[in-house]
Amino acid sequence: MAYIDIKDLIDKDRIAAQKGRDIGNDERVFIVTGAAQGFGYGIAAAFAAIGSKVCIADVNVKAAQEAADQLSAEYKADVIGIGADVSDEESVCSMVYETVEHFGGLDVMISCAGIVKAGDIMDLDKADFDRMNAVNYTGLFLCSRYAAGVMKEQQKLDPERMHDIIQINSKSGLEGSRANFAYTGSKFAGIGLIQSFALDLAPYGIKVNAICPGNYLDGPLWSDPEKGLFKQYLDAGKVPGARNTEDVRAHYEAKVPLGRGCFVEDVVCAVKYVIEQKYETGQAVPVTGGQVMMR
Image 1: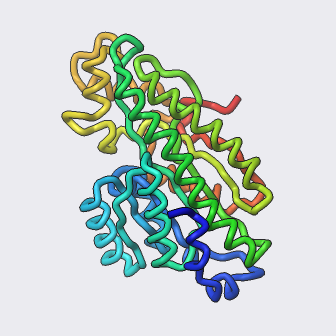
Image 2: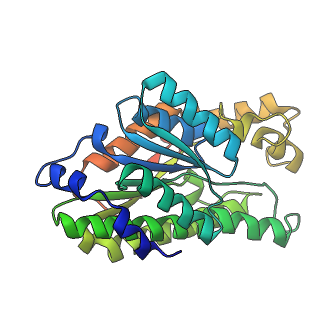
């Protein structure tokens, strides 16, 4: 299955009805990957709440469907859940195909799926390194490629139409991180893709940007008692002198000038800005409470 097969599924009446005007969030179709939990779920919920049509995609099929059912019931919104492994090309193609088949198009691709495993250069093995790059880097490429195929077809029907591809990157994509090289490297590489895709896709009205959140300390990535980063960083000795996960948390909160971790609503605000503005592409927008400042 190739992305060119999708063009016949595009709802031309929908594009015609929206032609020549700015479409609102209540008319947009979103895919959010990695959306069964964490930032992805929060972003999907925020747009479902204002009437957007949302595909929640996640490698955990059951969780994706349950999240979609929950948001559909809570907001009376058109939300679907799809199982997708962003590192697998056929899976990504199927995800985009099913979304366009259901909604008649695609306006915003938010690539949020990501994995992290801490460890320094001597501790982390090649299998973990390859897996992080497959999800965090290759996954961004595949999601962007197949989304862009749909968006370019829609732009043919309405040359003034704008679309968005957004990666939820990380502050780790903006500066190095001790005992976290594989994740950080994949995120730095992601920003390279974002800048390059922005140049490739600008002629088609597709803006490509990254949001770089600070640490979501209350989310499962950090707080899971077995696999979370508090536990990983404690075990890896990343925080000298830390005796427990509470010490690790305090260490990371102290790094932030505004004194707290990043919240879902902080990221949602940045995503809405990136979508609504019409004159910026190829950017990595920090949402870090001042911990990482633009240079």
